[in-house]
Length: 82
Image (cartoon, rainbow, N blue to C red; front, top):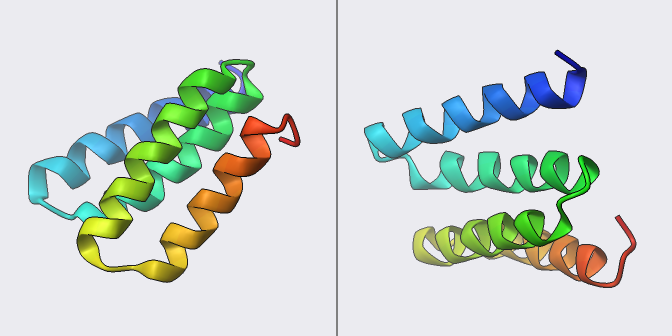
């Protein structure tokens, strides 16, 4: 298993655990990290969707700084600057 595949598997597991324990902030961080890995693997659309989920969660938990970072990352993916 390559490094990206390993990172993806770990992040997907972390996201599920964060969901189970109700830790939306850390789940959003993990979603944003997963978006980077997925986009690097060639699925930019899925990366964008994951970033949007992270943005929505950051909004819900009131973390404007992380929300802004995720929006900037989404803009980079959207314009092909990943």
